[in-house]
Image (tube, rainbow, N blue to C red; front, top):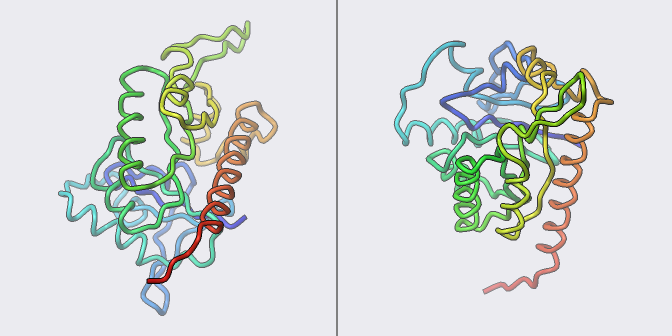
Length: 231
């Protein structure tokens, strides 16, 4: 599967660190930027275009312009899936991406605590208003498993995302525990599915990815089966 990753978090672009990207994208003869490939994924991020520690003090229109450049101004080639990593909340980036790209669906990520789930509900409602299907909810940092005794500690609460998914009538895509290997891999630029592919957390990531792909295929079939009217 051919996959692209667009880092739409303009104010906090961390994809270059997490995917170990250390060079600026080239510009081809069509005057479009060529995404940087890492681990077989084509990546584009504002973090590739500015100094490492630069702070972007931009208003909404400038954010929208930057996202326009990273979508329309990038030669993505033929992709099966373009993953857009959104910033937290519901703001200019979400509106711009929803307007510029024909999104196939949105995957909501939240920790299980109530204050985070409030934002998740707002995200679901926002995407529903712009007619973007919700692919599911992922519970991040669901629990901490003691490496010595294997006891599970639900630091941010237990089962909040699963409960919210049921309440809002969307799929629960899975849960990711609070694990040192994930943090270490993110800091080192080596995803845990690469460094420890047989670990439980890697299997959880693969399982969620497969659920998302399956749901996207279902939505595509539903779209194709709808009657077409030419007026």
